[in-house]
Length: 164
Image (cartoon, rainbow, N blue to C red; front, side, top):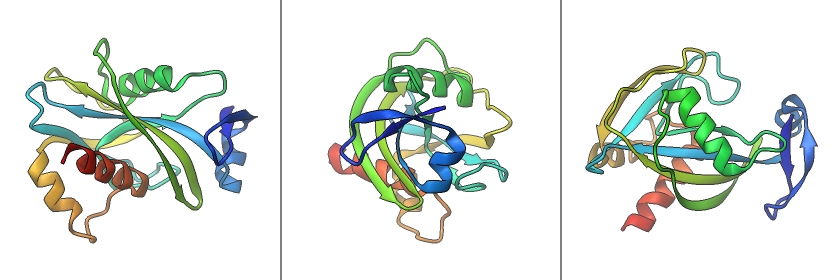
């Protein structure tokens, strides 16, 4: 079961994940931007080809759908640990961004974590990953042909806009 939200970002109940996906219902997710301790690089990964949404494309956010009864903070911590094996780091809240890209309608809560330790991929979700300089990420995102998760693109563009 996942938390169901309305278009304004208010939690209004819970539904099975399959229904949320099939009907394109508003939900919430937590997304964590993993940066090197010096802040110059971000961890970019390639999603597995069997992901239910946006398979086989790049992303720079570790994240997922908020479960019923779970807070966005708890979800961020859980997803960073599950997808990249990173635990015990400080998560800094950044912003919440409504993303309406049917069939995905999500209130994305963005966080940042700093880490130079090992990264361990969850094999069911992450095919491969690497550290990328921020300037290179900007460059690649400028290429519309580079396959990147649409909601992740919206979030990183918002992050770049806020960072100046």
